[in-house]
Structure formats: C-alpha cells, structure tokens
Image (cartoon, rainbow, N blue to C red; front, side):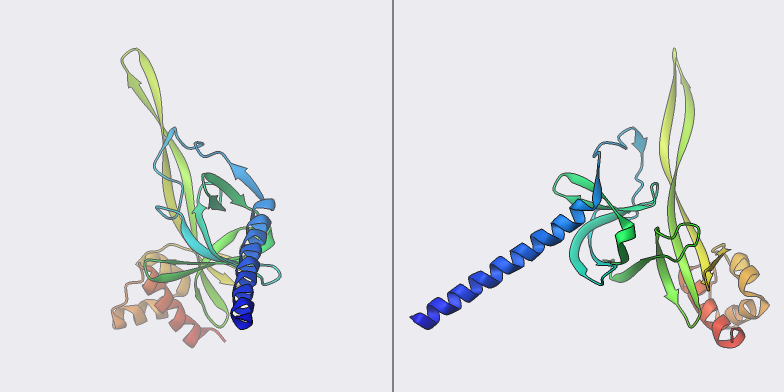
Length: 222
C-alpha cells in the first residue's frame, strides 16, 4: 500500500511539473510578444500567410531552450511569425529566438535569423546548407489595390499577392537568383548550365537549384 501511494504521488508530482513547465513556456512566449487584432485583414482578399492554417512548430531561443508544438504561421506581409493561442493572434518577438522548425507535407522546413544582413532579426527559410554557401527562400506578400468603377460609385479592391524570392548566401552576402533556367545559370555560370543539361536537371525548380549549387560548390568553390 505504501509503495502504491508513493508511486501515485510521484506520478502526480511529475504531471504537476510538466503542467508548470508548459505554463512557464506559454508565459515566456506570451510575455515577450505583441497581441494582434484578429480581423485586421477582413477587407483584403486572399491570405498573407505561408500556410493555409496554423501548424505546430518547434522554437529554439537564444539560450537553446526548445518550445515544442507551438501553433504558428508566417505572415509574409509583415515578415513576422505569429503564434495562435485560443482566439488570440500573437506576434512573436523574433529577436529572442534563433531557429524555428516546421514539418509540412512530410518535409522539414528550417528558418533561421541573422542571415540577411539588411534585416538581422528577420527569419528566412534555409533550403540548403553547403560547405560555404546556403540557399535562402524569402516568402513575401504585397497588397495590390484595384480601382473599379461601378454605377454611382467607385470601389477599391485589395488583394494579397504572394512572392517567393531566392538568394544564395555567401559569408554574410546575399545574391539574388531568379528561379528559372536562365536565372540560375546567370548566377552559377556556364559550367552548371552544361551539367544540368547533361544530367537533365531543371534549374527552374528548388530541387534543380539545390542540385546546381551542390555541383557548383564541388567543382568551383575552394
């Protein structure tokens, strides 16, 4: 009986500790964030978000503490990650964290800050990390406004327009690369273009860009 009571007490203590840690994690994430208005995009068609819904992610802070299973999404219009807590949307204070990992459609997506020298606190997705070079994907969303003339009134329609920009990062410098056969060949050179043609690699895709950069690093970067 004494052993049973001790075991029950240990389980309750462990459960209480886990709940307390979860509350502390939530408190830290919420205390260092700014609450957003839920209906702030009601008059704009489309979505500014990277994902169709908020999905769970793992967040690592500057002290290497990991927060697991945090529902979030990336807002390409503001350039910030947003956390969802119940019916509240919260802007993540990104300067307090260094890495965010998301699994979407069976693929792991990694985001890091401190890569873009023009915006050191902004997170960008790293598609590939080589010996010296990285491939960066930057998801941005602009707002397009159209003027429509209707009988007796003028209407303005706003719509979100998503844009995907790709860069090659090299020792603190970012080189824009257009995701097309000609765009990648222009940046990586004739040798990569010939290699892609021989191996039947489509340089106009993310997979082709990664394959091209791997070959570029292997043969042309010391």
